[in-house]
Image (cartoon, rainbow, N blue to C red; front, side, top):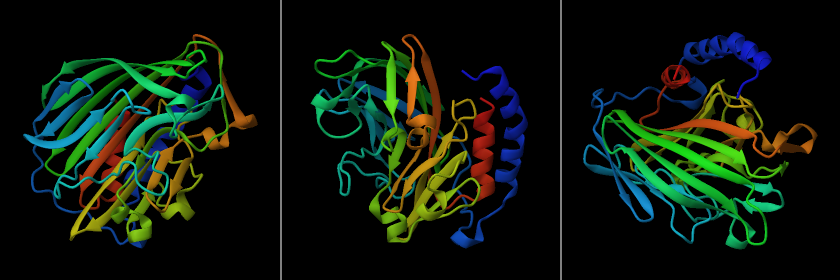
Length: 318
C-alpha cells in the first residue's frame, strides 16, 4: 500500500509523467510509426480451465495458455500468440537462460531460496487452486492461490493472484496480472536481477535481430533502458513481414513506481527494483503484504509513444 507521503508525491508526479508519455509522439529514432488496426471493435474472449492450465481464446482462436503443471518452477503464460501472425511473440526454455519462461513472475534470493531459476529443490511457486470468475465476454478473469515452497524450509510467501484478459481490438490483447504476496514468516530478499514480472520475447523480435526496445521516456535498447525508471517498456520487431510485440506496464500504485528496468538486447525485460535495493536487501515482517499490478500488452504493429502512453493512462485510473 502507498503511504501518505508517497501518495502525495505520486499525485504530483503521475500527471507529469503521463503528459510526458502521451505528448512525446512517435520516436523517430526507432523508425516506428503507428499501424492501422483492422478493427477497433472489442473482441470476444473465453477461458477454459483444465487440470494444469487455463486456455484463453480471442474471437474463438487460441491466444495464450496460463500453465501451472506439477513439475514447473512457477506458473507462466505460453505460448502468447501475436494477433496477426498467430505465432508466439515469446519463448520458453530457450538459450541463453532457459529459465526465462515467456511471461512469468518469480524471484531469486528469498530467504536463501531461488524461486526463479532451474531446480525445483531450490524453491518453486506451486499452484494450490484456480477459480474462473468470468469465463467469456469482452473480458475473462480468474483467481489463483499459490505457495512459495522449498524442501526443508518454511514458506516465505502466500501468493494470491487475479488475472484478467481482454482484447480491445483485433490487433491488441491485454493481460492484467494482480498479485499479493503475504509474508508467512519474516522475509529477506537480497539484491538480485532475477525478480518479479518479466517477459522473454521471441529472438526474431529482439534488438539483436533488429527489433526495438523502447521505454516511456523514449530511451532505446539495453544501453538506454537498463536501470532507468519508466512507467512502461515495449519490445517489438518484424517477422515474416509482420510487426508484433509486447509491452509491460507497471501500475502507479506499485511500491517502487516508476521502477528501474532490467533489460537485455537478446529479448528480456522486467520492471524491478531488486537489483538496486537500498542497502542491498528488502525485509518484510511476518504478515506484511506486497501488492503489485502489471499489464502486458500484446500487439500487432508498432504503437506510437502516444498510443502506449494512452494505454498506460487509461489503465492507471483503474
